Length: 193
Ligand code: NI
Image: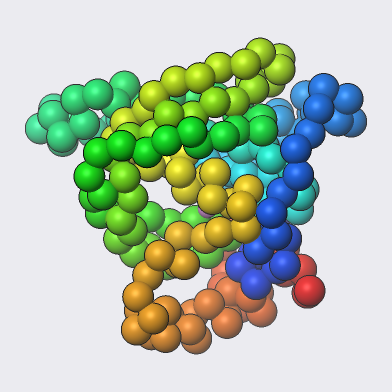
C-alpha cells in the first residue's frame, strides 16, 4: 500500500525518532509499504518519520542510481557499488574523507534541490528486517543517501545545511509546501503541528 508522505512543516519531521525492537507491531507490512511508497514516488530513500511513524527505520536503494551512471560518471565513485536495504536503529559510527557537494532533494520537500556538503565515507551499524546486526563502510552516493536518511531519524533535513541566505530565498516555497500548495504526482499529507 502506498502511504502518503508527510510534507515539510510537520513536527514529526523535526523530532528525534525512537528505537524499535522485534515486537514492533506489523513491521513486515510497514517495511513493504515503505518500499512501495518509495518506489512509487521515484525516491531513493524513505525514512519512517516521513510516513508519520516516529521510529528509527529507513529504507534505501542506491543501486538504481549507480546503475544509471555513465561509465565516466561511475569513475567518480570507484568504491560505490550501490546498496539496497532496510535500516533499523542505525548508528553512524564515524565519518571519513573530504566533504563534497551533491545535489539533494527530499520527498517531504518537493521541487527543491540544493547542493549539500557531506563527508565521503561513513561507518554505519544497523539491524536489517530480520533484526540481524551489520556494520559496514560505505562510500560515495550510497554514503550520501544513508546520511540523508539517517538525518531524518534525528529530526534533521537537508535544507538545514544551507546558508541563511539560501534558506531566506526559499522561504516562500517552503511555506507553500507546509500548506499543501505544491501539487505532486505522489500523495502527500499536511500535518498541522
Ligand atoms: Ni529526505
